[in-house]
Image (cartoon, rainbow, N blue to C red; front, side, top):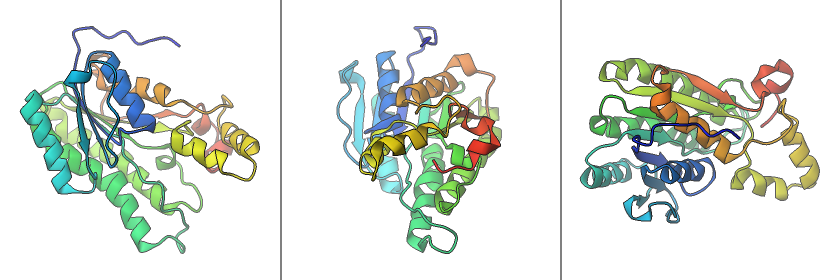
Length: 260
């Protein structure tokens, strides 16, 4: 895989939510490997990064807690004096259900984590972000196309796609760019554990792989590379965009409606 070449002088200060595992962990590791200072925020305390270990911050907190958000932002402000990249990655997929089945609590939790938390984190961080900074939201292909029986998640991720556009317009005068990525099925710990616990793990994995034109799962590192690009000066004329990284899933209407 080709590695994107960015100036070695670009060593941003980065905050990643949902950074203990999966895509968030891959994002934190990638930025750290390339010289960035990273604050890892998660409901579970993230394990230390190996690259430039002394310059990173680790905050255990809930993205739905205004107190926890302010605590993290206050800490990075005191430590770094500002922030260059915010990656809103934390997500909640637990509220599976159709219009008539999803619980009120599950619906609200999906909105709180997947839509309101990115707004709150962004509002808290923007005062510390200079011109040239970037915000990247982790949306989903399910924010571009609906999945039957998953109304809360698809609605919250669709809202995040349009929040990306609105924020891009609002923050453009300050020189802050806002973009999103829309992953397909990614081989995170959560997905692989779900596959392993299914009745027929081999068939379940093939079913997931067959959702994509490339007939495989994506990797967290591949998503991290796209996020790195969107946050970097190489994407300086991109804002308000949601970029699919889905192995061709949304290229075909025959694939787009199948469950992820």
